[in-house]
Length: 174
Picture 1 (cartoon, rainbow, N blue to C red):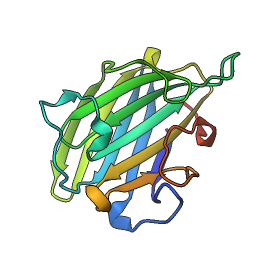
Picture 2 (tube, helix red, strand yellow):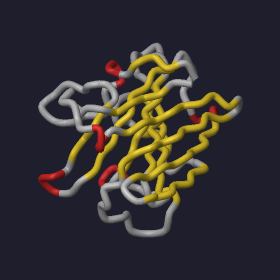
Picture 3 (cartoon, rainbow, N blue to C red):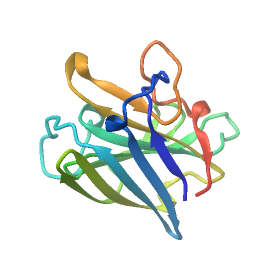
């Protein structure tokens, strides 16, 4: 069971223990279970009811990207799974960097806010993930305006946060 401990900003700057997010991936046969344990920052919730929500990355969110090997053209297929403390989620399939092919894919997801922390459990069908071997990166975003913070399991280089860097993902055995 891979555990992705998000303990630094996107550029590698360590964060305090009160900001660390833990994501666990569990192989469950035809599905993959994703468990999130994260601080709750009290950011404004997305509009609309819980469930599939476009633009979720603009709110308090934890994201898991799972990629397969490049195809013959060098494009990397990957699935982006986003979950938030209020029960909102978003699943995208991409073929090549920032090239979505499917949006708002199904995800079973429940979240619970308990004081200063929130936990969530998501179940995604394995058929929605790229073929293995798989690599991953995980991210947490919170805050508003100039106080917005972007955390990453694996550092992503560049002048600003850019999570769509499959070459920076690390192997995960799921």
